[in-house]
Amino acid sequence: MLDEKLDLYNAMLAAGDPSQVAGLSRFFKCGPGQYGEGDKFLGIKVPVTRSVVKECWRSADWAQLERCISSEYHEIRLAALLTLVEIFRHSPSGHGSGHSEDAFSQSNCIDFYLGHTAYINNWDLVDLSCYPLLGEWLLDKDRTVLYGLARSGRTIWEQRIGIVSTMTFVRHGQLQDTFAIADILLHHPHDLIHKAVGWLLREAGKRDQAALEAYLQGTPGHGGSESTLLRYRQMPRTMLRYAIEKFPEALRQQYLKGL
Image 1 (spheres, rainbow, N blue to C red):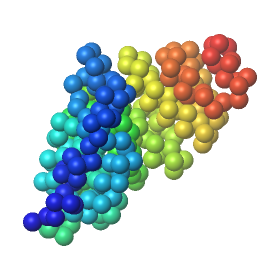
Image 2: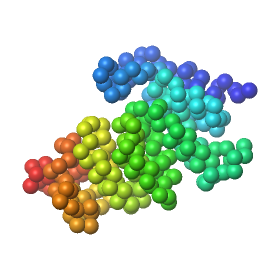
Image 3: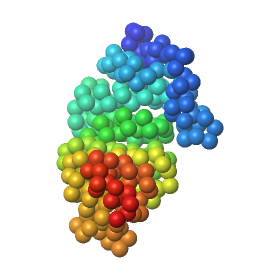
Image 4: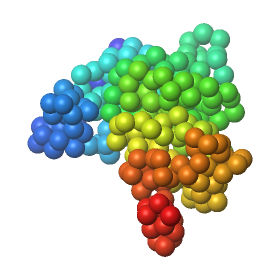
């Protein structure tokens, strides 16, 4: 029997702070009609959740992860995802053989993640899990799954996974998937997608400003066509502001003015 002190679910319940619940509910927009409507909180901030995960992840099994990812409490779902990230980092690559010693192969972690996206239902749950998992897994693999999520995701959260997962590629100097998936989401109606796309474009621009400018302009060799010329004039204002945030001020103003 697992020592209760190391059980992820119970450890998270014990870490709850009722005085923090109202503030977290407001921060994650859980009111009527908001994007996090109906979510419940225990009042646990991210550093505390990380501390619990640090103590518990080695003792976690699939049953615990299943219980936690499907919890009604936001922080327990986050704990499941952060635990999965730790398990993934310490697991053998590949598909494993199905034996108990490699039950936590990286492939199995990815299968679990993609099989539970219905519970990854707010921006922090996406942003703290997708690129350390999917991004890392796909670094040397076909990335079609990200395009599918961006184009046909059932929720804005699945679509956000599609673009934010490319952070790992950007950090390795591979920018083209970020630009290509940004195009899929260029005219998306939701502000949370605008922010995510703009954020990833900004990160790409920090590695290669010329490549980002070529994307914004829609020049040949960077997806340029009649429909994508002068992308910066087409994209939502929030997306553009995020994308060019690190540009020199004079250049930033030119883009904002549509020059």
